[in-house]
Image 1 (cartoon, rainbow, N blue to C red):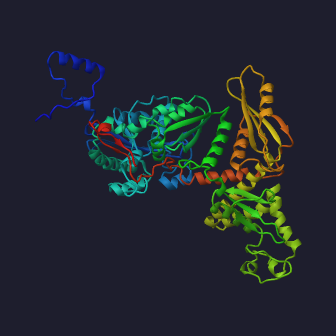
Image 2 (tube, helix red, strand yellow; image 1 turned 135 degrees about the vertical axis):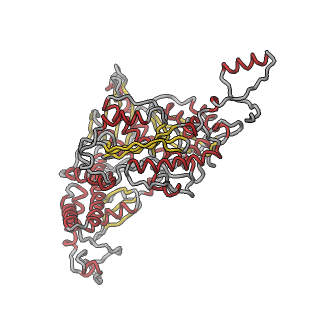
Image 3 (tube, rainbow, N blue to C red; image 1 turned 30 degrees about the horizontal axis):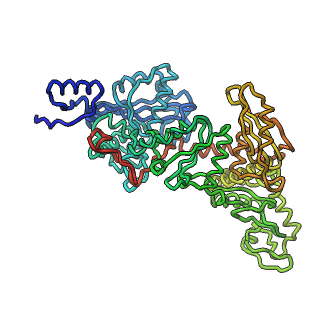
Length: 625
């Protein structure tokens, strides 16, 4: 075999000392690198591709029902492992529909404690591969911990993340296994059975390996480091975090014209800002933002509530282009009951401070329309948009013929009769939503009894949207009515975190360290606290800020130090519908318990690895423009 010409290699300090000795002895300064120095070739690595079926999406409350694994090396299948596992509990019906595995099938199967030793022996010395590796390996680690079996220190590869780095959005819309399998023309179609999905993942892995050759990825070390490599341009900006202090607060990345690019918050500013210059930050938007950033400003805060509130205000003020949340609070939608003889529901961008009955804000038009539709399902409020006159009569519309409207435009309903209907909504928003919601929930039950499940689900979701809106309104009203409220939370070190809230707005924040006087610190905060403008009884802050205060107030351990006025919730309120909302959320979460919550969409221009990042001189990891 003809040897290739010698080339310079990266040498350790010991090798550098040897190089100096070689030069002193008159020997060449460079030497041919060995195969061992270049890493383990992928063709010589043994991979065990594993897939699990489980009773749910979390190892905390779910168990494994099937393990399937395929051992491959150099493109050749060396062996397969498959077994059903008794989870020790009933398999939920929707899981059985999804996977085809029933409780009867696993009744005679071994428990996970008996299966794990055999699987670990099968995978000994191999690199573990899985599609959505945190899910599968997380279940295996949890099972090992529960069984008292040590988890082996093995390298792992996530084909979902690898596909995200190597494929573009033009090739596949996302990186789910069901999408990648037909793209790579796998010999086995994934079907939510462990061994079949593992076989499909093997073909996907080999298809991705074909993409690695042009990038210079030929060794295991380069493969496992592919998703952890950092653009050298990003590394050179690590000095931006040098002046950032530890502790809670807000940080601002500023661009070339000193404009805010991104606003964030953290309980440890220095650690959080430094993470943007490491391999842990893989979001493409943040990579682009860091490339533009010229400096980082830090605003230390007394505690996490002050930091979160300052973040909201800064985002609303500056609207940084790399922030997605809370940039445009003025775009939120509200549902208002108009003030006229025959009021109707109207979706508006803002509500006046003196508006009496309104709900919101809603994040989008769909949510607002769902709440409006739910009200119209319960109450025969008019849906026409014109203003009706008591004196000038008109003609009835189709809704009147359907019994969905009392036709006040024709004089069929007086102002007083129509007002009784609108009063149901006013009462629901103010205190008692039962007359409004009871007909809706009864209709959901009737539709389900008639096996009209899709119609029942649509109405149920509308009712849930309406209940959340009413609950939100009542919670905000309870805090808006309090002129001044002082809250305290233990800081975990013997001291107290203090917050002064006036009409829902955080006006002062501080800390009383261990050994210091809480009363003295509080007096100083009250003396320097902001005085909010606006009429009494109205919120003095944005809805998002007031909800931050409410969540902080309701956390375990928070104490009410001082209350000026009355802090109370309306009775009966929406408390009786908590179980209903929990069931709706549980049903929504149970639709796809195995969904990968990570961002696995492909990129228009994925990051490419060439050269230096892969051990080839003169090359680097190129980021998308």
